[in-house]
Length: 113
Length: 115
Image 1 (cartoon, helix red, strand yellow):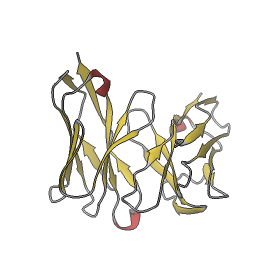
Image 2: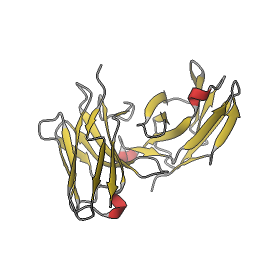
Image 3: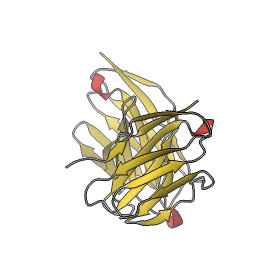
Image 4: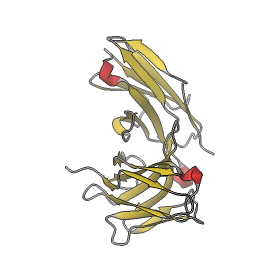
């Protein structure tokens, strides 16, 4: 069973701080990694995708990937109360499960004013 | 661009009844996915279609769940008969292709409650 583990929450940070969300995965064959944001009662919304080792920045969001360590993270700079949501890490399965996304349980983030 | 459309948004049924959900993917997206998301967990794939063919249904409880995508566009997911443990949000997603680097975009989901 391919697994995706996320750091247990909830995570609470003050407005303007950096929020750090972490994720590890078990399948060394995985090639694609995604972060989704899910507001309560809403569907997951794609916010970042990353495919190569290193950092990828998009506005206030930075995704980091280390395939050797099977680790992917999401940093949110200058956190805002509107960033309060559950963040889901999703990893594409390698090998015979190519195309299937495996999701972590999510980390709940609260940004307080 | 219109997003993934799903209906109904909410459904309440009694156990052993049947229920069906409908999904219309983003225009031009060949790949369609149905996920089940139980409260407090991440989505779990039930079935993946590429055009009108099934690519992956290994996690679909086939004794009670069925899905079809007859014309390669919209899709229906059915549960018959429903059990209490089927209470969840059923999410439909689509992507431009079945390759692993294509991001999936989700609809608003159907929240199913079994009494």
